[in-house]
Image (cartoon, rainbow, N blue to C red):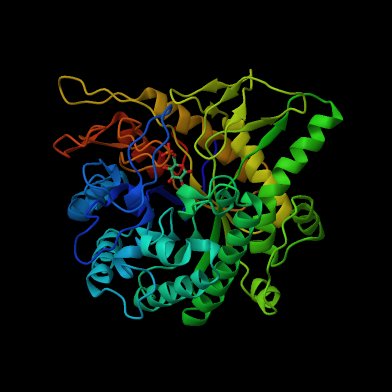
Length: 470
Ligand code: BG6
């Protein structure tokens, strides 16, 4: 098996709201993620109106990374990580989102966190907005439904870019930006009332995010021309169920919905096709006169994407379905599924890399990929997770083939996640993704002690050999 170049960014990914905890410490405000109750694969998380008494909100404590970050970064350094993808909690910097002055204590936390990473030679890769919006922006303005959010977000970016200009080089503007049109609650905290026009609301909100992202890219480059500012989307690779042209047509349309986002962010405009799509959905976008110019000037430096599973398009009625967090799919009989019902498809990662690179020819970044599974601690404290190792190994093999055999330009790979943390879709702790086990359960009980899983040692070796020894 081949290996990847010395400068390849092997890393791991997390998101502030899923691990930091300290939800109301040092001036932090309430975010939409703070209002998500606990759920499970069969019980949707409830998005409450603010933080209600007597309810359990798993993200409030997360895995208390806020107070454990030194110990955690030391473990990541021991694994040999070259980069660490995390996000900034917007409400630590702007507790309500619309203040003029940032919260200094929040900035200090990230100063300390990035210093800690840099001390070990770990490059921070920072997502500016990862599935959390200040809840006050939801209450006062309706979140991203409202165009005013663009200015609040850009102001937030401006503060980050100035403050961390010498510490952070790689940025991603929004996590899985295209998911807003699938489920606007988790990504953007948007509530859609009965009788409201779903498509009109979500595509308009998406447009606001796209303009905000473009403005941020332009601003970031002006503040530090060395910045590499990328987009991040879920890449929902979709197969046709059969060679029936009707399946192929549906597959194309399913992908078009998502590629609209990358087209705008990479190419800088809504294509003719995208405009037709919107028309077909009876969406009339309110676009301000300058928006086209802004989108054109704010194209990204790289395309980051998450890839966990693949999907199937079938034009023929009802079929057995599988789970997923943002997307459910028709069951693919050729694939195994995870304990949480997600289809496991390593070859699909190679296809995704090729499809994206064929379309855009800009550097790609695999920002998330991983397996949610239950782990068991042995009496001697060890944790054997061959299922996770196999999942990652199979995906890395395909990733290397995409680079070596197919010629895809790939900057980095940050599997989800470095440490066990709160699941975004279910709010569970027992759905574990990490190389590092964290002693905490679904009810929030546990010592928070960190333990290395077998996958920790395995990934360390993968990084040390640049992917040669899997
Ligand atoms: C991605 C999100 O969609 O999937 C992460 O960006 C999330 O925030 C990850 O945690 C895994 O999904 P889940 O629902 O199993 O946590």
